Length: 71
Figure 1 (cartoon, rainbow, N blue to C red):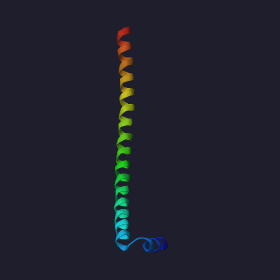
Figure 2 (tube, rainbow, N blue to C red):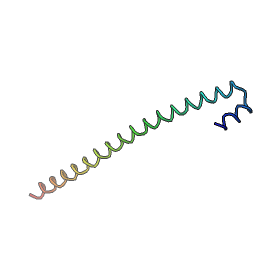
Figure 3 (cartoon, rainbow, N blue to C red):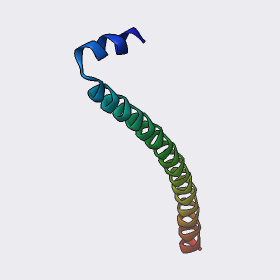
Figure 4 (cartoon, rainbow, N blue to C red):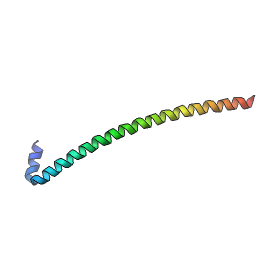
């Protein structure tokens, strides 16, 4: 709190209000970006899981094809 008081002595009141408003806006933006990041991380994890499943399925089908060609 002392930092704001010290800053208020250096900067006119309107500037302090502007900085406080901007700080609040930036904090909200950080929260929004954090939520978006979390959502994207979850989607990426899901996509990687799907890719691993697809890779295993393709490998199994390739084995089936090779076995069918041998017969």
